[in-house]
Structure formats: structure tokens, C-alpha cells
Image (cartoon, rainbow, N blue to C red; front, side, top):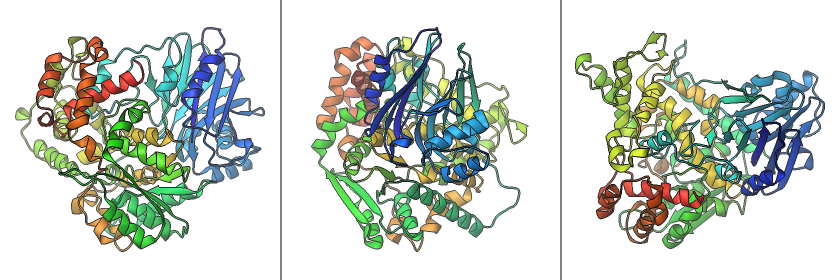
Length: 625
């Protein structure tokens, strides 16, 4: 919806307007419709607006409520704002606008730091209390909207992307070895609060942070995802009906809460096709769909038009089909990377970037199918890690391998009992082959000694899988995916690439009420029939069978999948550049080994090791770091 930024001085000085303006300039693409600023002593807010709800000036930001003494900047959409408005009016609050922004202000005036619990939607916002001189920032439960910050004893600065913060002075741009370990272990996922830069952090999803005038910070988690069976058992059909109803509600919310047309990114897969079907089912007449395709490679098709065309034929939406030639894909890659708030390895980012460019010429808002695979068990590795965990659990404890130097210390409580070190190790051993790009031992071969560390990622994942309130291993894995891993991969990728063109992407499969329902579902109802069994049952009779029964597909960008030709030349130039050599991150012997046979050096999950190194270097150079 928007781009937000601000600074709270903690040293008695006043924020400088030139730095607020420089941050706002880097946020202009996220909000091309309006710019505004606000200051109060040591606090200054900046806002770039993408007008979607209440298009009038009354909902422009920063928004100030004199009655409560509060000021706000907000990025996102609150889908239950009409219901909250009615409730807050009944509690005596008065409104001067018709949008969701003011509802957040009044909710904070009413409930204080508990306000995020009442909000249903995607959001990142900051509220300044002019009387208490406190800054309150919060992020939505699923981490759909970003909030980056840089803090020291002099100031607290925040923004919707790292590029904005990097325009301000004093940011420590040195690389964080622990984040680098995450990056190369988890396919570019760096879980909050870290980023690859030591001086920039990000607020964790489902958290709020209060900054006091004396610099004290209070971090609070306001939501947890419980992945346990409900007290009362449900039949298979009851689960299907409940998910169907919840998903229809999520789709309806994301279509109706807008004062501009809402489209759908139609890939031809089950998830986006089901969104179109549900929009038709709830009676939406003017459905607008958008599909992109690329040139074929000898080994792989560059489009899935045959499936998206079947959906278009069934529902007759207003459809737009775009085709991007391979040479255009490669030439625009640096541009897409420069728009990433953090380095990403998913090569389909360029696809989303180029698709968003075209879609933004027609609509301001789209629904997208991200999250369905993680919420409903759609990937092939879920049954594999599930089976691996069961097999390891039956192995005598004395013979259970103890990699990642985990030892036998007790882990967190889960389901009312202690999880032993060996049990925690079983969870990690079952998980690692399907998620980790490379073993910890390979880091020593790839990275220079200054960037080597202990097995930080192994420890992080082990503890994440051992968090309380997950009944089975797969419950813990899916919860980790939904609450942590996809936040900093597909969800961040879609937000970055769409907002680079002033396009808001809404993700109904990550509606937190739907996610809570799915987390309680028995794993077998997710894994059956090749995964996403419940969604397939809902889709049967609505979506063409050819789409439901097709093999699992991925966003095809063939020109960037195969490490050859101009793409290989580009990566070689990056890794041989003076900037890369002076950075001293990679061992030259490792680079030379991979360059000698680039298409044979793949990670455990079939990623290109050469691309991973080059992608990070490309991002760093694009940010002039």
C-alpha cells in the first residue's frame, strides 16, 4: 500500500529533514500517489502513499489525531476495518475519514500495545505518542509487510526497505557472519531480526517494539501459531468444508476491501486458479487476470499458458497475457536485484518484477497464491521429511547421529514435556536434507576465515522446530515454514517486486485465521494425493481437472535456470570484479572450482552455487556497498 520511514532522536538533537527526504525518495515507487511528513520534537515521520482505500485527502499520511495525541504512518491493509470502526464508535471514538488508517490510530488509543491483536490484515506501522514521547512499531502476524530499522544510542530509524535506510549516515554496512550463514544455508532466507548488514535489522513478524525517549526498547510477541489437533475431532468432510468457508472469506476480504479494482496473478497452478474460481463462486463479475511467460529452453518450457488458458476459458475473466523474450529477462535482472530490500536467490523474482511492471498499468491491487504450498503441504519434500523423522525416531538413541554439534542439552517445552537434545536432533536431521543448501562444513571452503562462524543455522532451526505447541514433526516443519522461512523468501520477494511498481499484492492463503485453521489439521489431509489434498478437493468441480491433476509446477524462468551463455558471463564478471575481490568474502579457490564446471556444482536442493555467490555480490554492488 505504501512506504513508511521515520527517525526518533535519542540524544536531544532534532532529526534532519534532508535525511527524511532521502529516505522518502527511495520509497517513491512503493507510494507514487502522495508524499507527506510530520515532526514533533525529536520525532519525524515520512510517508509515500499508494491510494487504495478512501482515495480522498482525508486518509493521507502521516495521520495525526489531536484528540488522542497520536500520529501514525502505516503500510498495508486492514481487512476488518469496517467492523473495528463500528466497535470503536460504540466505545466513544470519533472518525474524520473512511479508510483503515484512522482505525489503527483509534485502536491504539483504545487498546494500546494490544492493538495489533485486533487487526486482521497485513501491516507495518509506527505510532508516535506526543504526550508520552514513545514510539510504537508493529508488524503483521505473517510478516507480509516489511519493517527495517537501524538503532544506536543516538537515534532509531525505520523504513519499508533497506535502500531508504542506506541513504542516511552512520549505518554499519559490514556483513554479518551469522546472517551470511543463514543466507547460504537456507536459500537466501535470513530470519528476523537479522539482515546481511550488521547495521540494519528487521522487526520480527507478530511482534511490536516500543522505543522510549531514553532509548529503552521493549519487544513483545503478540501472536503464536498453535499446530495441535483441536479438542473435538472433525471428519474429513468437516475439515474440507471449514477450509473452503475460511478461504472464501479470505478471498472476499481481499477483493472487497478496496476502492480500486483488484486483479489476480494467474500462473496456471492450482493455487491461483482456485482464487479465480472462488471469486466466481462468491459472485464477483469483473474478474481481471494476468499471466506471464518466457521463451522456452531446450530442456524446459518457459510458460504455463496451457493451464492458465483453461482457467480463462472456464471463467471468462478479463485476461492479460504477457510474453518476455529471454534477452529481455537477462538485461533486466540487475534492475530487479537492485529493487530487493535484501539479496534473494529465487530466480523467479525477475518474473514477478517484469509481470508487476505490466500489471501495474492496469490495476493497483492483485491477489496472489503465495503460501498455499507451505500452509497445506504442497511440496514434494514434506512427506520425505515426515517419513525421515518417523524413521529416525525409531532408531535407538545411542545410534542417533548428532551432527551440528548439538549435544544432549534440554530444549524448549513442546506439548507439555521437555524435548531432549537427541529428539531435537532428530527433528533437525529429518529437516536438513530438504531445506539446507549446503552443510556447515562447506562454509569453511567457500568463505574467508573472517566470515566463518559456528553452525548458527543448525542451532536456529533446531530451536525453531522445538518451539512449543506442535503435535508432530510435520506440524513443526509447516509452522516454521509459514511463520519464518517463507516470510524471507516468497513473501518478501513478492512484496519487493510488486511494490517496485506501485502494485499491492494480497495473499489470501496467508490470512491468519485460515492459517490457524490449517495448522490444526492432521498432516495426512495435507500430504495425501501428492499434497494439498484439501485444496484439491475444494477445487474439484470448480477448477478444470487438467489444472488440479497436473504435476507440481514452479514459476518458469528458463533463461536464468541454466548456467550458460550470457548469464554465465555475467556471473563470472561479478565474481572476478575488483569490488568482489576487495570485499574478501569468498575463497578464490572455491570460486575457481565452481567456475570450472558451473552446471555440476549444485546445492543439496538443486540450487546453483555459482548463482548464490553472484547474486549476493550483485545485490551488494547494486546498493553501492
